[in-house]
Amino acid sequence: MNALNERPGRTPRLQTPPVCLDQAEPPAPSPTVSQRVHKVGYTVNEWCHAAGLGRSKLYEMIADGTVQSVTVGRRRIITTTPADFLAALAGGAGA
Image (cartoon, rainbow, N blue to C red; front, side, top):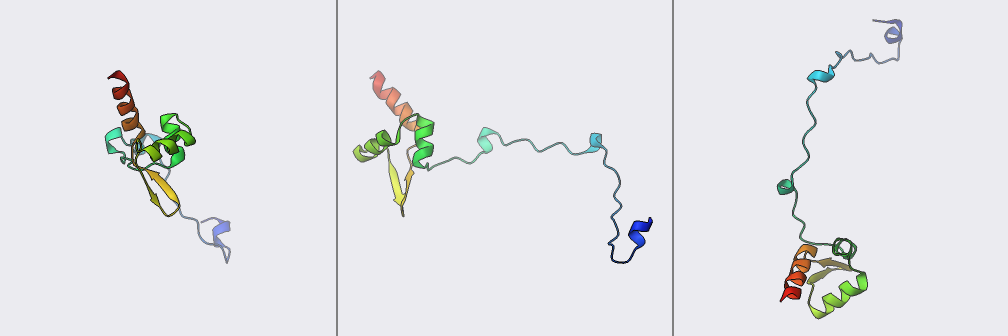
């Protein structure tokens, strides 16, 4: 023990063996797409950003039923995914 640890009022330092970086565990891989949580509700801003549309247009589409949403308290949650909306829009434009 060195003199620093022997003085009263000092807590002894833990002696840990050095870690070799070659033997350290590799970092856990990031989750794959299939392992990620599937999002079923979007805020207005998230949905607008993902779909590339503005808030006013989104509220128009909610009013006419093109986009489905629910209101919980004062929060509006969009239940139609931007991908589903854009796929339906692309399918309707081709017909």
